[in-house]
Length: 211
Length: 211
DNA sequence: CCTTGATAGTGCTATAATTAACATACGCAA
DNA sequence: TTGCGTATGTTAATTATAGCACTATCAAGG
Image (tube, rainbow over the protein chains, first blue to last red):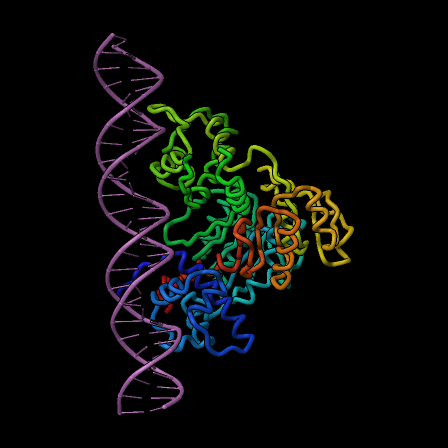
């Protein structure tokens, strides 16, 4: 089989499509089209069809797409047909915010363990999950067969936490610390840098004329 | 004039370079090279040089770049030579996390006002800033000449908040609600969708073979 | 003052991604 | 059953982005 390389931009859009389709489905709409999806999420109809074409044929020509059907297909493509076990490391303000973020659970990401280095936080219960000390990270994560780690610790500790997560067998890491992390190639790593987002804005607001 | 279009990817990398250079500068290092920067942030040396070349010549051949100098140039390019006035709307867990996020203030983003719809939150003080009711948003933001709005409210309210921000004269909006927002073209909008990031990970973990 | 080593800047090439155009297939109605 | 309208799936063209290789320039040392 040909494992055609899929652009990451396509994956991001698929995720947006699926969210849009969830909304549309909730309104009781049965059928939609690439044009409607495009309007709903702000891309071109051709883009929608192209993105879907990477994975198969989900519509019927002259008609469009069945909303429930297409949504389910995209969910499966994204690997969301079953729940994922997630661990959260770092219960500062950001970690706390992430732990309560409904978007995760809605999409099948279940936070099964939480860790923090601060003894004052260890033992507290966050969203029904007890905060454990870091030294239990590897055993607990391995026991739970947790696949995803979310890193919300200060930058200077991020690398060692990541190393422990990898040792414990996670396959993917979402990092919020603004540092460049070293991970082996088989580990999926994504960085979310909040300040970078603001800086892209300011660059554009300057009209690219500040320099 | 050189209104050469700059790739957004370049802007994002510039932001990362500048952070890296700040670290390097703090270590007292005077001179660096495209190769060192590349190693530090995980891109190719050619990429570094290319990104910088969009904006001018900042190094000396055979030698490299002066760290302080290059850092300052990039900061100016990104529009960070002066502070920015930022307003934060929504003081849920995420809003709270954002308000305390040191990365913002460090880079010159000053939260000058905070708003929330919840009467119980109005009047409380977050990071030295009093939380005001939404109905004061337009007047206060206009008075402060605030240029950037951060939206951390539930999805269903995001659009109306954005409309008010635009009415109040902001130039750029950073949106954390997972919805597609309509804004006029002159307004800079960036969306941060936390769930999308996890879904890109799961897609890749599935080895793109789940479908 | 010339030679040598090193590294920035730049044009070219290749690759990737988006946009556009087109041909195919389906449903419906006469 | 056949033709028409419509929206998909797919191919082609355009555009954007990244990688590479070459050239120019500077510093240092003999």
